[in-house]
Image (tube, rainbow, N blue to C red):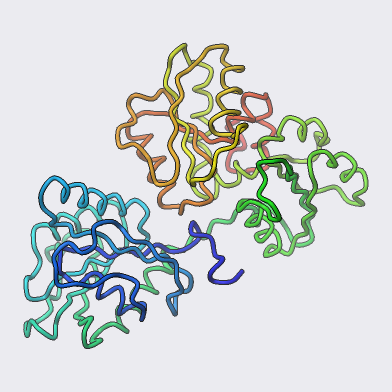
Length: 410
């Protein structure tokens, strides 16, 4: 897969934070060797987070994020600061840019504390060393002997290039630490195993291509040295009959779960792309527990349905049409549904009885874990599309049997 085709959710997200005119945008441009961010002496030039996918050697494909100043003022400024703090939820590596002439301020201290609370690897870029004439501090934020990892502090100049190479090397090191060792499906397979992937082709399917979870699953199967066979649900029974060996696993699009379960012999393990991604991006067990909340749903309860990407919704859209229909049929009541998509995720989840999230293929793992943690902190059960569909159709236990970590729990 080429660099430009690497999915955003699979890239290390590197975010640049700091006060206005600390030189965030200039440092980002110096690190990338490109004019990705607008640079100006006017305070507050960056008014919204700016994201750019690129390749940062020696790390590889990354997403670089430039953020508004954390010391912005006024009502609009407060909203911009809030946006900057929200970016932490998807940040794998943070760069806190400090103006060497102005020094480390209370806004920097507050942000660094939040970065440490979230466990985000961080480097402090002590910028404008060409102008300050001062020394770069050895440590910031922690007294000697205090618990926790101290951030690396590097003296740099975005203008002269001082320390930029060292900063790139540091980002590569911290980024590699954040790269996930989790696999979508490869850890369930041995070389030579056969996997049957069931991919419905209907009006919602993108013309001429497969959707992202299907592409990524095929790639992971190939990397495991296993073999994939792709079929529609309408040809599944015939495909299974023609295979010379029993598949190690059948993976289906969740919308076809019921038919695929009926056509797949009980001795062949079955799951869905959505459940694979719940495991890959987040945690299975809390979502398994969350789906059982459906048994206690009452008339008028509010259910939040979240989708990690934005797309044109069709008349039979899974999130806004099919899922609510399946939930009403299962519960026998009419809950009130709310919907979010893309980067939207409410801070206050207390109005909702439960959350049903997509597989999160367009979100990075840190953001998915953040959303799951938000739900847990507010005691709001959260599950995902695939588990909800499997549960309402009576096949959840079967769809979770391939996962060893759940054995003895189901």
